[in-house]
Length: 162
View: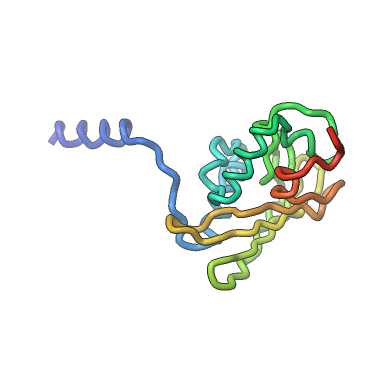
């Protein structure tokens, strides 16, 4: 009995971490925002991205431009890893988080998320796509903050010519 408990615990600890498969859009968005509701930060954003969005990050990294160079209100570059499109900032203290019910059309869905990050009101639209391993984020659009932006556009173009 003790051996089976020990073996089970060891298997869990040694199991490789794999991206989770989300069967519905709401469970994906809930998983993205759950750590913030508990005062924590999301550590692995890549697991939520679609293959198309991952490819845009790769292509953007090859150009040497950083996503932060495009962060709203800041043409100054810093590390791309610090900008989190799901909170429209580098750091988050999310309050009053509201997640809409998904609007689903075929293998695509749209979910809006509203919150206050510290005292900054934010409204994001998450465009989702169903891939072979479940629902993934295909784009993020900010329309309720100081500046409007679309993640895929920021990854493809240099809006300030930096």
